[in-house]
Length: 418
Image (cartoon, rainbow, N blue to C red; front, top):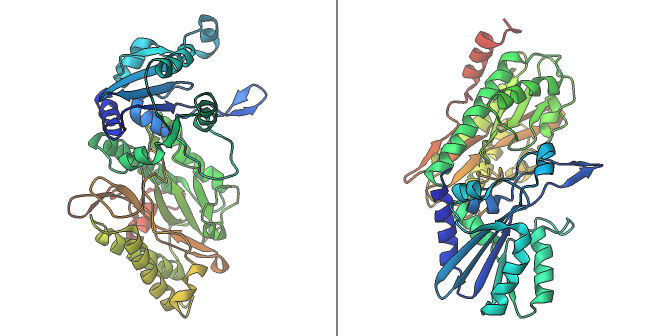
């Protein structure tokens, strides 16, 4: 994306920051794996959202004094010897061009610059991204810094800027939506490649490999999440991702997968018969899920809440389960449906921000499902929706979902089933 996007986001976040405040964000580092190996690096999404920088061990410092905002980006200094092993570090010029920040310094200068602010001026607040998903996980760089900063400057008020940035991220710009569209386009191409090459008897991971090939051929370095390629009863496990079982004739393959493009994600689920034909029972269950998907799409518009969508989805699925003979009363639905109707989608697959009232510019998933382990069937149909001024746009409209369309495509394009 253009640097103007990141400039505007920094301006927006600093408007609501009071005078006498410092905002500090960290890019993060690749976690240690084993021996001299690390896991692949991915930038802290809030740092990236404000800078466009996807290199590790960098810092963004912004501070506000007398209504004026100052911005500094701290980067790693290039080491010619290490560059022969790992490549060149980002230059000052490149960092300025990507981020739109003119004051670029080296990371070793940070402590002096940070201390100077307190020795010369009156700063009362330090804003950090203090995201913490669970109690029992390692401390983040921001959380560690908060502890040290409080020890050195006991008068400082530590504040959490995480939720402020997250709320900004809920409404996508045109540039962000285009990135999501591209991620979805690649995801759709990958699913069609799976459909063209899958057949009974293959291992789940063999089928998954066709999706991986499409992503790699588009230069995709990371998936939106671990691919779910679940056959038969495995599809009744919501987040099954082992993908190591042999498929059987007559089974459905439940796919839940997504490509990541420029750190924006696609997320699509489809249930496909391995032999190209749905059984009558599979059709009955599939149509209940599809009916729910369609009605939730029709309901999606500004002013509707996630709660309203969830309530209606449960009503429809419960009605369907009664007709299917699975349950006798709606109160039993949780036996076969136990998740929400969807989530926001963006730089994180389960994207951040409050799940309340829908607004134009939000992107969310619509993913009803039924999971029936005793019948070896799990079906989820997931589409990605962009909330518009008066309704929604189905971003995944090019990914077929009708039973007749799926069977026709398999018959015409799967070389093993002809």
